[in-house]
Length: 599
Picture 1 (cartoon, rainbow, N blue to C red):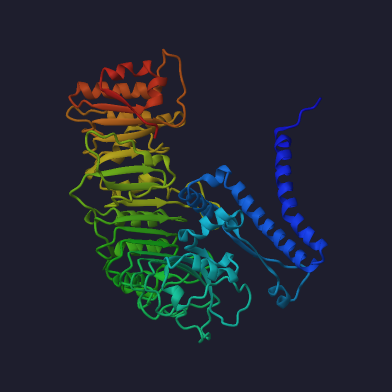
Picture 2 (spheres, rainbow, N blue to C red):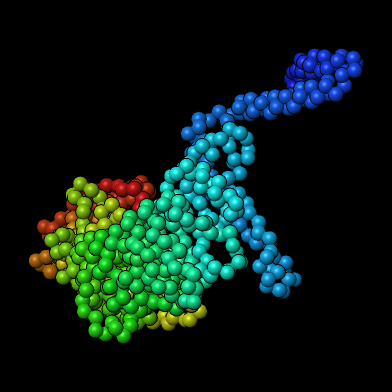
């Protein structure tokens, strides 16, 4: 005999209760209908049915409230919706028929939208009310992907808060294609915009109707990102007739603003100028100097593929950057422009400079940039320096660690050097690559532009306290190490990466550290600590044959102690100390051996 499920057992009494209630409510109308009042009783029955349907919605809502996901606190739901908003954006695309050749027919093709994260407003009433009542969810709007009829509703849900708007601006008032990708930049909306990402499309000089489309109604604008998709450059006041009074960040693509542009507000603290690969306009060094001269509060400046050398640069005199400047980052393949910039810009020693010179096929260009960048006259000579070297990259910055801290040179693990955003003072970073711009040209193997040894002569090695070495492939012998680094006499800490495939480099370094002329050591005579990191797992030899790095290091430690220049500490990665535990025993008798986290 089969037994009924718990659901079936519950269904029977529930059906009995609700059937009794329905019968009770409708029996009265049926009795009245039998007396002849058909119209009245039918209308009353419709009311009963309508109320029952409303009650069904209420019952469904009560049922949903028992679900675990709806029992979350409202604050937690809002946080979840915020994560969803960041990862599930609305989308917009156009439907075309491939066989339609007529452009007008194509331009009138249907546009489709998906709501993305906003779909949560249609899941249930609780989610809808929670999301709608949280104005923070509606402050960031990408108008390019939202249906135009929804924009007013979305802006209203922000409840007067400041807005982060991404939109397009069609300079041609008669342009009809792709309409719906822009927001109405009226006075009420502009007054609430705090961040604006705007693409200006189709600018032409004969478009006289387009004069300062943003007007002067941007009283709260803090960040402005602009990109220009046009064949002509608009005038400086194409967007605003007055300086935005609170503007702090300006990020512009494919448009070099003239020095009198109203975009260059004196309140700016961050400026980024970049060109896309298809851009035909560039920025001369003279033009750049004029822009910097009108930005007294500028703190960060980024230039990406924008620089060139113009005729006016032939008469260029040294110019000062704003005294408030903290970080200057320049990426360019225009070698001559980088030479002019680094040779003429007077940069405070407290400012940090990052130069990325790519597609550099001539070592001479890299040498001139290195000479200008690391000129001791432009550095803080009162502070000790930290130097990190790796193929293609050099980083020089002030040394901040004290004797109780372990320096591990962790930036060697990252593909690109970075600047400490908390304390970005006095960094000088040079990155040089010879990668062709198209990727199809062949680079001869004899090219040496990426050989960091070329640039060592311009580094202030005498003021360096700590040096980190990547896995070098070219130094090799002890004589080469001494020739390249003999002037670094004040180095007290070094960090080395060791690899079996280039063991000669580390052995050569240790031989140089072991070189003694009877009075002092030829390389790093004041060396106190050394940190070692291995590339991957070191190859394990038999216990009677210790690892080559440990043998070479042991010889150095003995020699330094014997000649009254003892080293104090050796730091190794924790897993290496345990992996080669017995092989470190002799080193423990010579210095303090400590383990550090893997770097």
